[in-house]
Length: 321
Image 1 (cartoon, rainbow, N blue to C red):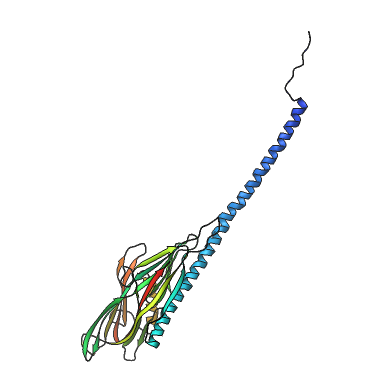
Image 2 (image 1 turned 120 degrees about the horizontal axis):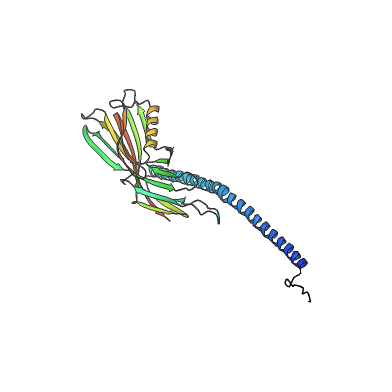
């Protein structure tokens, strides 16, 4: 009987051993590649989760600082128009104020943050001011009841930096964020306590005309500013009996009540006025409307007023995008 040798396949045992060794080398290369990819993804995740938010937060902060400066320029230009009208007696100059709506993004990793600019004319649902008092002309008591005001507001819906609102309202530059609000540029409200106990009051009122409007996006916008009219009047305030000093009632409607309240309180204190009914002045909230941000209607009553100087400017503002 002839013994037959069994053939296991095309490769001998030694050949198969060499092949398996080469296959192990291929697995090692694959594992090495995967590990390199994992290291790269780890650094990429660290970059996107840590560095990108810091980068974007800085971009949004710089953008809000830029918008604040632009609102300061807006106030300065309106003030310049008023001064020019007082000196020349004419309202012929039109100015333009650019606004940067959106902040910069990070290419590929993060899109730019949009911004929104709102124009709210005098008498709008959340911004306005009015005065009520009696004054004397030739010994006769004449009632005064005028209203106006208005607001220009910017909203930055920041995703990494704190969300903020800036507003130009009655000559004041105001800022609001969730943890509080403040006056960044003061309005013109002043008190002078006379030696006889009477008070001289001055208020510069800026009435915004042009209708409610808004623009938004990531690009640039602007506002055309045109002073239509400016007047300065001094009224000798009286009470129920002609010749007596009386009271001036000013009613404000605003979303920035705390900022206005703090400013008025500090200004009155510096002039030596005492708050309270029957004292020098009183300051009270008379209505609050719930909204995405509350709308306050508050009343400032100044008693025993002798002279009330009322400077009033009618400013037409048109937004462009």
